[in-house]
Each structure stands twice: as structure tokens, then as C-alpha cells.
Picture 1 (cartoon, rainbow, N blue to C red):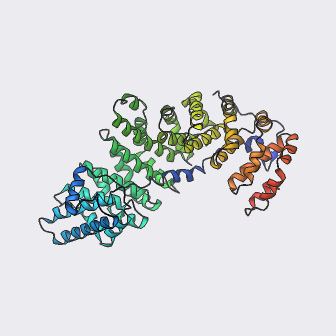
Picture 2: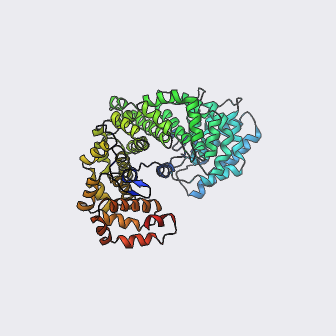
Picture 3: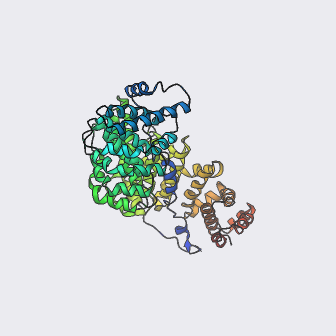
Length: 512
């Protein structure tokens, strides 16, 4: 890309208070929040699954062979173990800790089975009043068994993966979980980080509670542990849960106040693409590093969303280049999706940011990656790529020219005319952002015949889509008199009449 100055077109027609340049410079970020939540809904909470073969063996010895029988049998096994645990707690004898441990191993195993919905077992634990006992074990300094504490933590972690009401009962354990992060028990740390992630991922209220108890400061020690990359990955996932939400402003303030300097430095280190190149022969290590990268990029995605000063600081620190270097045709989709979204956020504010991001990343590299992603079989990846292209097209004229010269217009038109609804919607926004270039608009209208597709989308009951298509139609009508008859011949009057009967009265003025 070549940096270019903005030049306002002389004599441009105004449409509802917007000139053509303003109307077709439509950066978008707000709609991405819904997508973020949808993508992460299944990852906000995680059950700890698959006990080791030794734990499985111990559990089987306590309550029989768990790999045989019906769900009803499994529930009964769990209920029996719960009763044994409660009885051992009441006895408080010298042997009771071992009895508690054996019962807990069975309960944990049942909670951790991938083939079972744990909700009934969680309810049984709650109904037996066992959660308080588990928290007491976690908090206790008198227990002689670190294994007992670990099993209690595992059980609480999986309870916190349940419903809001179930998670709320685990909330009092947060101070003990946070304290465990600075301890020496590695397994307990793993459960504590996971549990805090489940709690923070439940709701804004619980997330804020974890933050107020010192979550950010405690997690800084976790992601510094280069010897245990799986723990670092879980720590970064927990951080991502703490950084998002419907109103993440308070979380961000606390993050920047407590750990900004450290976290930014550590994130920068963790995103070093050389790590992957150096570890190519060690598949397990590569998978761990890739997992860490995914979660770090999601953290940066939340930090760059709807926060212009914060996003500016992240761009200035060089993260655009770091992320761009991770992106190529062999990169896993799990890394590409948050990488595209993070870059799209960076490109969603101003021409100044756009120039810096494109300059740091290298325009050709970014466009090559976007071209690859737009043809990818993964629909979500294609959608992200179209959105990023749209935000680049909302930038300065030199960026528009680079995208057009790279051959993206035919691709976008093809998506507009033939793809699934959500991809067509993204394509409309992207093409609208280049409509201020009248010679390009003429090509879109006369060569690619986009008018019928835009009018078809006006008839779909999606308020945001109707608005952008109406604005696009207005730009087309204002740009050339001969386009008026083309709109009429394509059914423009009928399309506009459907808008005038829409229940959203704000649309009527646009269609009038």
C-alpha cells in the first residue's frame, strides 16, 4: 500500500446529510460483539475431563466398573459416592480423609465423563450440601492430603462449568483458588486457573468479582510459567474470559492498571512465530504453543474491541506485525479466526490506525492471506476475511486501490450474488465501502450487475441489512442519472415499497 491523502470529490451529491465519501466509509465493529459471544459461548466454560488411567482405576475400585451400565446406574454410583463422602466428613476420624478421597475420586470421574451430562450429578452434590464441604477442604490448611484438596478443586471446577445458579455456589471458593495460584502445588494451580475461568466466564457480575479479588495480578504469575505451556494456555483462556462481556470497560481499567506493562510484554513473547518453527519436530509442544497463541490473540481481540485508546496502544506496541506473521495458508483455522478479528478491530477506527497496521503488516502479505481465507471451505473464516476487507476498503483511497488492484471485486460480487445470507451481508458492507470511487461503482453496476442483488437483500427482514442496502441504492441513484432506470427495471420501486410497510419506522425515511 502507498499512503495517500484524502481528497474530497468536488460537486458530490449529499444524501440524507452524508456525501458519497462519508456514506461509503463505513467501518464496522459493533456487530462483531455478537459474533464474539457466539464463537465463545461453548468455550466460556469447560469441564475438566478424562482422568488419568490411575485415577480411573481407583474410581472403578471404589464403585465398580464405570464403563458398563446405564446412565441410571452411573447416577446411582455418584449418589452412593456422595453419601459415602458426607458420612466420612461427619465421622472426622483418622481414616476419614482416605474415605473422603476415595469417594471424591469416584464423583470426579463421574463428573468428568465426556459421554455424560453432568448436570444431574452436580444437582445431587448441591442437594446433599456438599459444596460447602468441598470449599472447606480447599481452604483448609490442616488437611494432610494435597490429593484431597486437588480432587475437591477438580469437583468445584466442574460444578462451576454448570448453570449460573450452580456456579454461584462456587463463588465463595474464589479467594482460595486465587491463593492457590501462588502456591507450589502444580495440579492444584491447574484446577484453580480452570475454575476461575469458568466463574469469570459465567456472567459480568462473577467476572467482576474475580477481578476485584485480584485475579489479574494472580494470573500474571501463571502465564509466566514457560515450563508448563498447558497451564499458560489455560491462564490465557481465563484472562480472555475476564476481558470480555457486555460492558468490559471496568475489566479493562483494572487490567491496564495492574498488569498492562507485564501482560503486553508477555503477550508479545508468546506470539513469536519463531517458536512454532523451532519446535516443528515436537508435535505435542507445537500443539501447546498453538493453543497458547489462540488464547492470547483472543485476549487482544477483546482489548481492541470498542476501545480506541487501548487499540492504539496495542497497534503502537507492534502487535499487528506479530499477528500478521502468524497468518499464512498453513495456519490453523483456530488461529486465523481470532487473528483476522483482531486485525479487523484494529482497522475499524481511523485512517491513521489503518495506515499503521497496513504499514506494519505489509499490504501484500495481508491481501494474500485475505484472498486465501475468502476461498477457504470454513464459512466462519470466509466471513471474517470479508469483514476485514470491508474495513480496509473503508480506509484511505490508496487502500481501496490496492484491494481493487488485487482482484477482490469479482470475488466480493460473486459472494454477494451466490453465497449464504451472512456472507452476502458482509459482502454488501465491503462493496459499499468502495462505492465512493465512482469509476468503480460504475463497474459494479454495469459490468457486475449488482443492483438486483442489492434490491433482493432489501426485502429480507434484517434492519441493519436493509439500512445499508438502502444507502447503497441511494449512492447508486445519486452517482449517475442512467442508473435510475436500471434500478426501476430491476424492481426498485417494489423493493422500496416493502420497506415502507416495515414495522421499523426509521427505515421509512430512507425508502421514501
